[in-house]
Length: 240
Length: 364
Ligand SMILES: [Fe+2]
Ligand SMILES: [Fe+2]
Image (cartoon, rainbow over all chains, first blue to last red; front, top):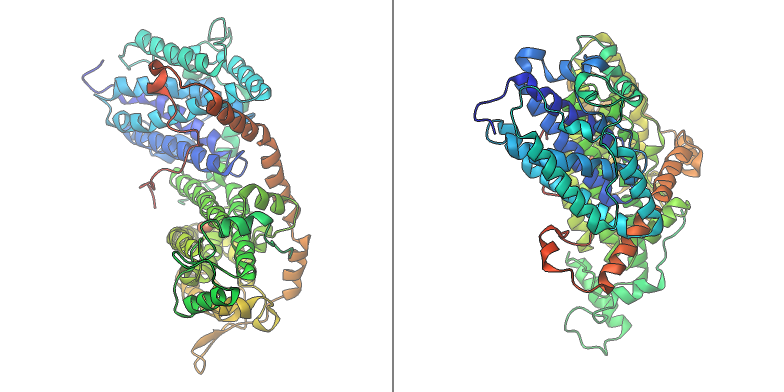
């Protein structure tokens, strides 16, 4: 664990993770399976957006204002992992994506809490996100044959994007092996209780190893950014 | 509009704890209950779920609250349309929080309807099958970013004008829900105003966008108060029951009087050449409303009627497997022996879906 603050640019990957996942969750508005989930998914989206903005504020000297960072970078400059940019698909994919990510983000925030104030505050929010994903994993894994099958399909499909989470981020001097072990422990426990099988094989496909962190993204991400950035870019220099 | 007459269970739920106010002797006659009810309403007392109430009062409330709840959730759509394109992170956070608030309003209101014996699933079914309505205002499209501001300023503004008197409605749970709702709607109204102000003071293109949005939303928002008093069918009885406290035309006038000076501060023009101050009346006179358009939209011929309902149905249908799974899991949990203690630490707090947490502090 670091005692001194990491270099600001080391915070870009976690900041982009939060921004991108927040955007994906925002796409659920008006489409959720129950009204309570309209509220819950928006809560998580808002927390993540808040985290992204707080982290971008730390990057002001290097990269400019939060809107310049979010709206004026090209796809190749984003450092988020590929997991968070994956499309929502059905509710099962959204829940599994959240479970994989929050189970990673929580121990990451715990490790950064002593040197990054934003992470300390975010840890409480992340614990709630993990709990939400876990409860739904238990319900859907156990509920009906269909929900079980959908969850297992989502778990398998998204598995290949998880290995990248543990590629060390330059400048974040933390115990990455311990982080991975904690993540695996959480998943094994939750999937076990949900009657789901932890997917086999490496968590990283041949074409995605460390890719998002290096600015190599999947095709849906470009369309996501096009939508997100279009209005801002159409009015150069305008303030909103 | 299709009426939301009471399904049989409404009577049951309403009389669940005895048909009268607490402690009343069971041999009271119908007339005596009616007299108690009338006296309570006349004295501005609140009617609570366990109190006796006339069937027609209950049915009117269920219909009105359900329509209000439906409006909250359909109303999420036109604004959610801009979440993914919000032009700054600050605006994006405000908009997501607003759309979330509307979902929360839907929850409070379906909850209030359930205190009258209605059931959320059944009410949603009536919405989806077109037997119950939602506010026609949401059948207009949001074409530009400025529409988000115009909706906040005008549509939430009109909703507040309509709903502030409902905070004193005779039915307790509805009145209390309205207190919470109105507090949040006034945030929305201010945020909408502030969004338009930023555009109005921005580039020529932004300014034009703001004016165009106000041009399109002004007349529909005046129609939100319903038909003119002489054509309004339910009004008189609802006034007597203190469900409604002011007439449609009174509220519409109040709204116009509030908006005219605000439009001026915004530097935007309201699209009505007949708007003039009438010193004698102490109110702004305004031009005639196109009730033909209103009737057409009510009949389902608005630009977005089909689209809004279709999206709502699709979300509901796509979510069916999720709701079924949650119910199946809950049923299995009930029939299972208690989990071993080793797991208890990570057990979910309750078998309910995530509830709204305490209000967020950011950006309001
Ligand atoms: Fe609302
Ligand atoms: Fe609102």
